[in-house]
Length: 334
Ligand code: ATP
Ligand code: LTN
Image (cartoon, rainbow, N blue to C red; front, side, top):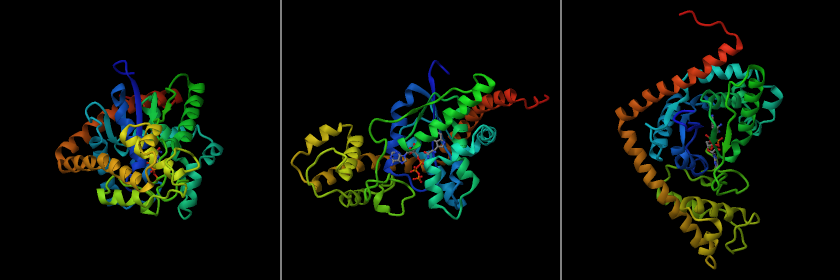
């Protein structure tokens, strides 16, 4: 604990193009709670290579993601914003924690099962041990809270199990982290299939609103969103497509779902979809402008990357050395 504040860790992969789901489920919450914590926000590029990546594209996406964190409102001086691959302690602790994680628990992870089914030609060991690297990310910084979308809950639970297992052998080495799931936007669904989460890796681009979509595209995707034939605006699981649109509108405007239902009472789906599109564009367009401005300021962004990698390495190194000592690795001779 620094300055009496608790510590927060979170990260996003630099794979695919970020969606509104990533923004509302994660990034937006990061910004709203960042003042209360000492925060570490990582671009988790080591996680990205569990799926094959083109080098130039990965490099470009990682940088776009890092600037998006800042554009979304995370102050890079108060918050440590950095690339995971710049801090070697992540990979080192992950190996150690691999030896405290069981095959059985990893094979129960739904994300592994989904991704293995999707990439049947490349079910690599990294895909399997992905949650252990995630545990290393979180535990290295002794994080108290981890803001994520609800789909990551299972990974948070395994992180806690690994930490408790390690602590029960070696004493209180790791802080046991808690997940922080936002009240609205915890799970944004696909606009084309409301039974699936909106995802970067969806083959149908109409199912997702990308953070870089222009206003016309956003409006078009909202207009085409799958709803139902009930034709009454209500917030219920029986109308999942509409419910998702209400969640999106609610997260973008700060109004509660029942207020939204009242506001649109008696109006048609067409009207509501246009209002959703406009509310989303009102959030995303300024974000895009700020990201482009930052991306053009190479020297400023490079400075942040360098300073924050050093800061992250300092804190991560402290935990790693403690772990190595507890385990019994020989001390370095100075
Ligand atoms: P992919 O779909 O390619 O597996 P992803 O969209 O889940 O990727 P991640 O980088 O794995 O993206 O997730 C980043 C953060 O965004 C996580 O905290 C995750 O919980 C959150 N998130 C992702 N999709 C959604 C969604 N549809 N609704 C709410 N939160 C989401
Ligand atoms: N698996 C996460 C990304 C991630 C993460 C983390 C999130 C990697 N390491 C540590 C929170 C804390 C995902 O969102 N898919």
